[in-house]
Length: 366
Image (cartoon, rainbow, N blue to C red; front, top):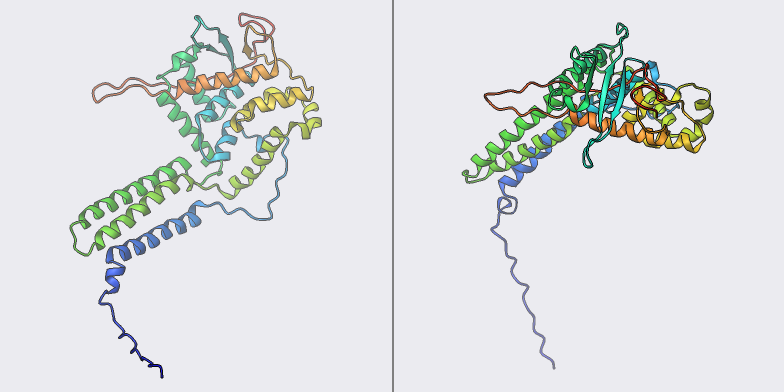
């Protein structure tokens, strides 16, 4: 008869490990602080930063700049930022409207770069916007002409003033309730402050047995970093600004889809010079020119830009981009400063005006 062995079940053993050992206090402190801190940042962004778009808003094509907004205004409303590119586009716009001319100055040696001469045209500026007037005044500084290369490190402070004037224009027209750049700066400073406080608490917490302070400090540091990242998106358009922003998207569609709206382009005179500054702020200058060429639309020769080369829309748009790059580099170039000497800064910008012509004059023909 087989022997059956009965084994007793093993006695249940209980671990003396507490939850505090598995989930240390510093981890709890970190999670709670991070969740609350990041949650508050997101709540603040949804309340004051995120622009609430309506789901039923349809994009309608616009065949001209909405409300006759100038290129810099369109660019600022488009990305909520007054870029140096917006200032460059303003120069081209002012040139096309007859306030100045642009003349290419060829390279003087093999590895040199093309320079550009801006010449002021005597014309009543009473109807110009404040930032446009300031731009012209700062660029020429009492002179009749200036080279773009001469603006390098001389226009930096003036550029800031022109941008400030542009932001003020947007606030005065109620496109923004507050200067969007100041909104970004305020939240960025707040984010940096929280981040530094978090680092300080974390360091102090390294000497604390339970590690609650170090965990909380790490969470506060992350909260500050998140706020710093989100600070760029806190500016918010007003209801009017949002309405115009939607129209600007429709205007961009018109510029980017030339082939779709060929008839509208054929019906407009001087459409190339009129649309060019807006194509610049949207970053589609060469694409715009090529689309016109592909459709057989031949723009008229601009009378505000002088070059020794024959006029070609695609080549011209490329040259305009080169001019914009040179101007942007010059006017945003910061002068060297130290605690004893502060070199003077100025503003550099370029634009065009009627009163020249591609077919004659010292600038040559395009």
